[in-house]
Length: 567
Image (cartoon, rainbow, N blue to C red; front, side):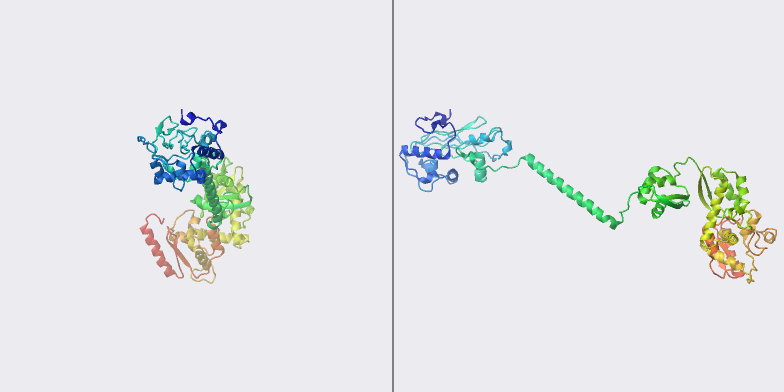
């Protein structure tokens, strides 16, 4: 049984209160006790509980002379005036004081208490008996509803030899000597307001303001929200910055057009051309929106490029443009390729093999050139079957195919201002000689030299072109060398050594570059030319025969250094 429960409450007007005493009731009780004992207690003794607590703490730090001499109560030790002398109590054997916990107790969050009311209602219970001379104030134990109490409660030894028994929630208790006023070490470091939250001294202190801290869960939630907000701001700033920089970096192109597109655009894929070049062409022609995304679609299709001329629409979807290049949706097409310089028979054979059409049918159509708009001088379509790669849908007729090829050549002539059929025939004839005789870089100079030779006033060549390529065409063979007898044979209508003027007709299919050179040659004084390197097509020009013969020697030297090439 605790000392509080053993006190006799008879005659105490507050004994039957059945509740914690209020501050006013405690003061009234103290005055009554003082009156009965005959001791005069100064008015300052009834200062606020806060002053009492501060006084007790000061007494602990400095050492109370009153406690050492056995005079006065703890309350009077907190008063600045000297206490009245009282009889010295008999010495009491010293009792070993438990060690103060080395680690300050944790101030728990309100949310961690099972019932906040428990802490307030059980704020303090008085232990020990009262002294005869002065009211004695017992220390108050800390109450906690759920966790073990790791705080050593204070106990003050009384002057009459009794000592307060401090009971802890873990079931242990300690007897404390009256000389040791044990204050928890955290009272010297924790502000009083926080101590009040933990202690709530005296009855009625449940009305004191309590400073609460957010729970750990709330703090974690706040930190998470702050982190998410920071991340959202960073992502937003990155997106806005990227949109701002796109026009500056040239990355504001759309990835694709919605399709299906409008109009018609022709794009050629030359032999050996790669997808990067083709994609750039398509983007420049506004067929696709973005060359990079088109290349990705082409690569994903797994298809390969084939040379030729393709018909596209502007602003097509990438997938549709890929289908055009790969001829998707068509089980089979009529495909063939014609190289520049091919003769008529070679061209017709290539068309027959690629299309499946009859070679005889193709030759019959070629031998009737008037139906294709050629002059009456033309014996066939030689020179007018434009080089290139072609794809035609299944079922396309032979005439439709030949018409397409002839029209391509005629359109090129018209683009150079040559519209008359007879004039077109002559330009194509010169262009076919240029194609066979010169390197591509010198086409315009070769064409100018040919026209110089044809001038009636030219006494150096007397209107003779003197081209080996024309002679060999008339002979039906391909070679770089002819003998003197072949040069003198006037029965060959293509012998430009023996017959003045142009040969009977074109000697092959010239490309667009050769046609353009023949339509608009360079104005020069050259009469001779010779290709001295068959690999590089390097061609030398001269105005006199003697100079020309010197370049011929260079050609012969190259042939000796490259056996089998000049045959």
